Length: 343
Image (cartoon, rainbow, N blue to C red; front, top):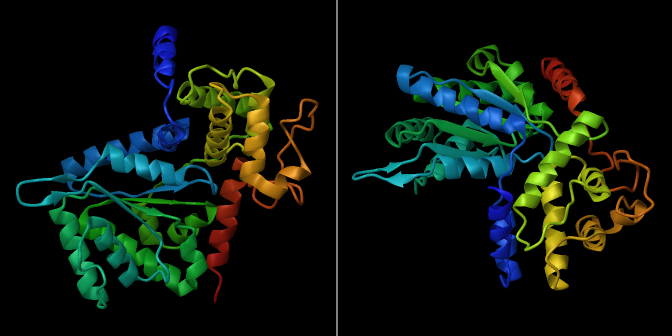
């Protein structure tokens, strides 16, 4: 959209109530390059599946707050279910790792995602057979498993192997594309099962931006600019081109979910004050809204703030949370080795 079109679009927000504006923000999907690449890989694998009938898995590694849930919502919108003359077509389904994580509960989760009313069965073999049959009938191409890192937490070493075999069989029997999404520990499930590893040969790291590096910060500021283009306000705020952009980067820890929460809170304060752009004061108030008492430890939105670093010291908003993208692979590798030790 050109500048004129963008300005016209912004003027459309005049007089719109706050609830509608926040609903607009909640629905925003602005992916970083690795997410775009993941979607392209999925499309390629769907095309390959149509031609060969063979499914292939994909592992997506992202930190907590890295936008996995938003990605799944976008994929549901990209490949929506539709009603055919005699059945429902469901190209894409998703579910989170159930508790406890057993083949039975995974099959029941698949059935529930498909909309099957009989998703509370007690027989593993019957429910698994039913899930595979319905996946075929509904022409499901992609099954996404969210929070795959929870499988190691909820299963001993032998249990991880059992679940790995279940997903292997699901790929084989249904000719499916299995998209496993999780933090670095999710790789344990794949790397500890040789047959599953062969069926999920590829991994994409959907890591947060390295905002402590000039190139990473520049990329994140471009993301902020894209968000600002979509803000439900009549005026531009110039966030990405001012010192506020850098403050937003470190306040959000380089993660899309926190960025979205901060901007939503800032919009709420701006509109509540009768303004149509975001100021430093709106962002300061938003920072407190999101992080509450943690915000009192350090304030990147203070005019004289110069301590540009990850806010991960004790008492700060992101304490004991940050795993730099360059360490993600090592975390997964260490976890995989641990999973292969005797129980």
